[in-house]
Length: 69
Image (cartoon, rainbow, N blue to C red):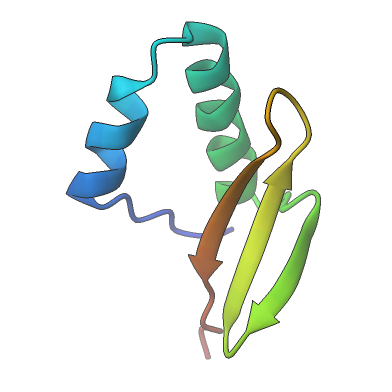
């Protein structure tokens, strides 16, 4: 399992999306990630990963991962 930490900026951005279907899909994607299903993702740098969602304009979420010891 992963902890998803949403910044205030992200919460405001997500809430500003006019398309409710898009907002719901992105929220579901984050829920799945929190349960360990990262889906389509790839490393893009030093401990930074890109989670890709294939719909609409091709949403991309950038996340930082650190291993818990």
